[in-house]
Length: 183
Image 1 (cartoon, rainbow, N blue to C red):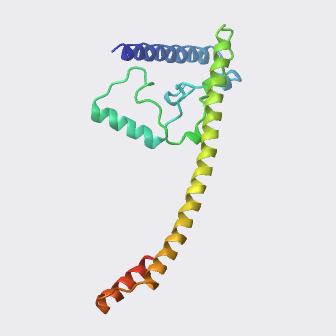
Image 2 (image 1 turned 90 degrees about the vertical axis):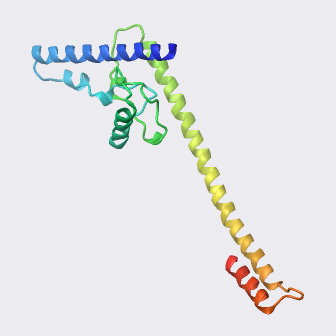
């Protein structure tokens, strides 16, 4: 489909940029001694290459993803946009170091600042939703406990008010025992 074609083109561009960066960094290490420049131009790992809105995978998730690729026979060209973002662990999201060392004379710096601003807004919205979720969960817990007290009182009232006309004593005793058990 057209979407897959666009995704493939993006993955190819990412792969080319990774190769170019690694080649240039390797050339620099051969030309210069180790020094301060290495703090900014770090070794580029596969886990470092991710978009602003992607999070780093844990080892377990990486193994799962590899297993899914092996099982389903999925091929990915650039090592990037394969299965989409994973929602688990959103509170531990960190940006890759490549977004912090974006010292460039490229006129697209404004675009980077705008992308960081958008990512900050998304993170702020997530934080607000989490706070709201905490309030909702606490209220659910309070209501659950309150319901437990109410149900206990109801079952005790049923046990104390249990009289069956024309019923056997064993049946009445069993119903009372059941009501006490439920309370």
